[in-house]
Image (spheres, helix red, strand yellow):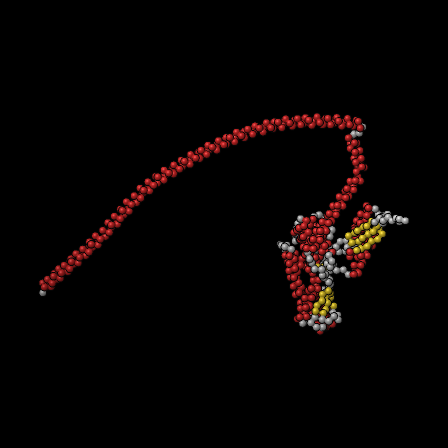
Length: 518
């Protein structure tokens, strides 16, 4: 039993060994075939690599050959260029040597000329000395013969010439002066006429009253209020007078301050529209309207500056400029007057070649002081200068402001133009308002001033007070006195009378001789 088990075990072991051997044999055959396939692939790759190496070596040899050929060609080209440059340098060196020779010759020639000039200068000095000596001896001889010194002879000749030709040259000087004056006046008239013709402006003037239309006459009672409290509060808040009369459907706001009248007009219209008219509401609305009018002033100033192409003005200055919209002078709106001046002045400046920008700014700012003259002591010129200096306006414009009324002597063409534009704008028909009584009184004052001078026979104010025509006694006033009289009358009018624009003084000296033929 035990032997059988041993035998079976041996037999099983032998079988397992046979199976294992057979498996290992087959596995070895398979591994060997795989290795042979890999080896053949590697050999093929090696052959391909060897082929590539051979091709690369062939290409290297070809490239080396081509490089040798290219190097030879470059070397030959470089040698040719070097030879060409060497030839050019030799040629240029030859030219330089020729120029140096030419310069040397010129230097030698200049030295010869310098020597000749020095010799000639010595000769000239010698001749001057001889001439001076000859002139002195000749003068001494003349003085001995004439028994007069040189100074005495000059003085005598001068007296003879003055005596003989003074009247002739005086007449010629007068003729030339009159001719220049006529030409200057004619040119000035043409320039002014052209400027006034090119600029068209409205002729309506501002008044001292504003009319507010009412929806019905019943509103008048609300405006007055109980015991007049509403109208009293309104007048106190606005600083104007309210006139309520029998005019149907309207009330009148009266006052010389246009800004206050405008605030009162806006406030009254708002109160009428709202219907609540009482002291507290009046104060509230008036305060709001004042704020709105302040904004409007800034807007007016901006528009004026934009219209004249003026930039970089601060808002505070623009607001002061805008205040001129609510200021009048002889019924003429000051801001409109300044804009009109600026346009006329710019055209005049362009015609005569002056600085148009300085003229434009001078015209716009010339009456800036009138915006605050009721708040600050001083003339509007002084106040305007202070305002302009505060905002660092350039000196040329300051001079235009200071001299536009003659307070400061005019020293620039631009200042002359500003003064002329001011006179043109203020003197044009319809620009300013004047009552009939004031008009008649001004004409009489003009005539009385002219009649107060000795030698005046008659005086007439004509051309709406723009000219005073004076007739003088020919026995008492000669030609020279005629010119002096016209100047004296003009100066007295400037000092004693107040008038818009300019006044022309025309003194007429007429001599008539009559004879009767029988």
